[in-house]
Length: 542
Image 1 (tube, rainbow, N blue to C red):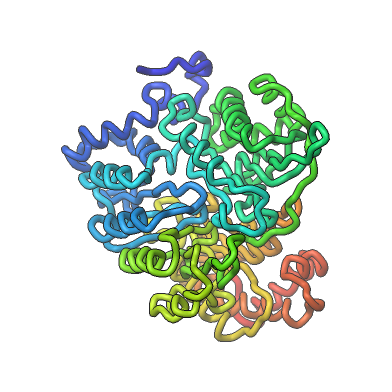
Image 2: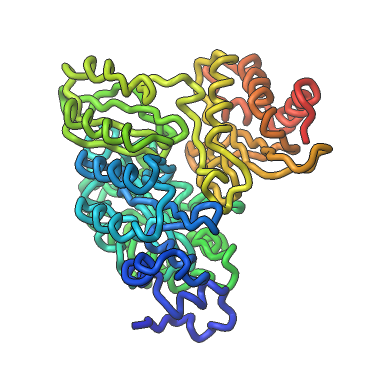
């Protein structure tokens, strides 16, 4: 049955996707895939239905005419058990040519899927408590969080029960399956902000407040963050939320977005545009009409930002146990490796794996006396707990190998750039390099020390893949997006140009100065001038 939404009265002013969603809820596509398209094949799918496949967590793979799909699997706050990991590996081996990507939202992504195989994949995932449903689409997507939830010495409370309740509340709930655009939630009680609060539509971060003479641990609330080609940093609302109130607040914020978010122009439909226009004060006023009044802000307990990196061996808050963070180069692994990770988690830990928004993975609950043996396992030669500096801090979107939106290749470029820099530059301070193949920012390049945005440039030899370089992004404090430098660099020249830019930092930085601090100190004009000199000296920019 079609729900009568209040914006239906203005249907003639809505964009085409909104008009489609008035005719059919996105979640209905799941049954259609099962009952119609999986049985009748790719050719039976009407063109307009492909946009609804996102509610099943499925996108058309590039090139669209070949009939392959990519799928995302939700992993709330990134925590998997070994049985789930083995099913992920088995499905990749059977249907996805053995390929697995870990995404920047702690999800798993498959490629090379056929529509005929989707129902079995839905069912096998569901049997172990996993879902691809609403991993994409205009709905609450994968809820990200602290991958160390429950074991983190730096968390105020264990957020796993909160994330589980949020997942139960939003998943497959048609009250929230028709939002103006995608909607991303982040929950963390870590003092180091591993869940990137400032770039999410809705985020909860650790705070304390004295209430009735007692210090209460809870959360502050951020709204309106998001990347893409018009990035916005989230803004904090003047409210304090107890742990048991998080779900009510999340429902309220989601209702405000659903009912007041923009639906005429699709490129202005994210929550960030509503928050930017209203401001946090008006947003809180409208939200209070939904959920009532909450106490004002307390004391922030975020003290820094670890950028989502956990590689190496670290003690858990449980005495005698450690977690081991492993680097997955550019987030790409295989069914064989993923199954082997499940085996290692069982053999050395509690059978738990934890995906990270830096596209890496963690084996947790390893008794200290077993750590040495785990570090000797052959798999850890590639998925290393101590990767080379640039390889270990490289993030990449899918790129045009599979993604229809991407203009350039990204994964192999990032591998080559990291390899080249590790060979040619010795540096004791990590530099985070992220690459995107299109403005949608799945590679989150705006928060990187150095961001690469792919595009095309015209040269005497014709159109070539090229990249714009941005510098100085971070999420310390309120956060700051990196600044694009003028000019583009052809793909084959990216690595040597970045080498010279990193050497500029290495030679002129002050003691202990991070890359972002260096950029803030010397200024963008100096960086631009240096880039221009590099391009003249090394290769011409295109």
